[in-house]
Structure formats: structure tokens, C-alpha cells
Image (cartoon, rainbow, N blue to C red; front, side, top):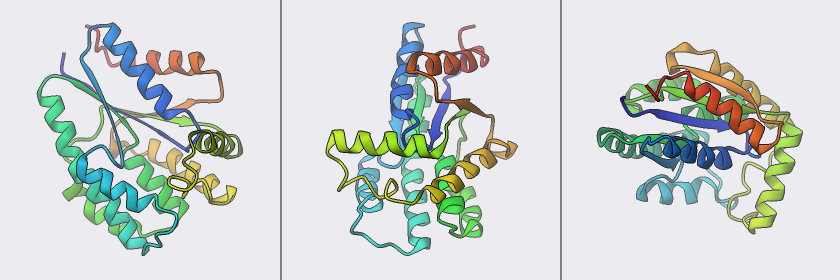
Length: 213
């Protein structure tokens, strides 16, 4: 079996990070070597880029924001490819779908700039992108509660500080992305159930990739 490249995405508060860990554990239980990573910040350079992007005191030009996300992705792609070449599957917390949803649909930044950069940014699209979906009001409240609990409201609260209308547009962006075949297979999963229910849905979808055969 060839190693899998899977991305989990969605509005903050949908439980992505939890489901990334759960899916990785599930695959490992079935003897599939699996690594987890994230965007932005999945590499050493990406960590520095992430600190800029999520700094609430940093006011960036829209084009700069897109370019920084893409720069992070260039670094991250090399990491992902190296892991896949070793025969290990990769699960990424966020991918290109977030840039389309947050920057293009949410912030109304330049789609032509992103389109122009894509061929120079992405070498390998995921075999599967799973987009966790729920009403923005619920997701944002969950995200804010998590940040307060973790004491990260000052360092990682940039996007949670947006108005609910912003996240409504972001959600539209994720749905749009899921319908674009050029980005590979994408599936929307209702994330409003409890953690076990959502995990079961994700596992069912991943099993369709026939990784166990």
C-alpha cells in the first residue's frame, strides 16, 4: 500500500486537532505508519511564519498574508514529501483549503494571486481532504473557549476575533473548495456530534481508500 496524504480542515472550533490525533491513532492501530503535521507551522521556518500570521499586533498587507501562507506551504510540502517517500502516511491539520476559505472567501483577498502561486507551491495534493463542518456560531464559541482555557488568546486569537459574518463566508469557502475536483477528493463531515461519532464518520471515509488491503 502506498502511504496516504490526508488533510483535515474546517473552521476553528470544529475539533480538527483532536480528530487528527484520533485518525493517526486509528491508522497506527491498524499497522499503518503515520505522522501528523500542521499548516502553518509544521516546519522550523513555518513556526516563524506562523508567529507572524497569528500575531494580533501585526497588521499585514493582504498580499503579504497570502504570500506568507504559501511560503509556509512550500516548506511544508518538502517535509510531507520526505515523510511519504519513507513509506509513512501523513495527516495534516489544515492545508490549501484553509487559505481559500479564510483569505479568499473570508478576508476577500486576491484569488488571482493565489491561483498564480499554486503551481509553484504545491507538488502533492492530499489523497483525501476531510472538511469538518458546523454552524459558525457554535464553532467560534468552542474555539474561543479553547483559547481561553489554554491561555492563548493573546498569541493565537487573531481569527477568532473576527465577526461571525466572517466565519459564515469562511464556511462557504470550505464548501466551495470541497466541490473543486482539481484539488483532489474532498469530503464534508458534520462535526456537531460528539468526538466518537465524528471519529467514526472519518474512519469510515478513510476506509474507502482501501488502505487496509
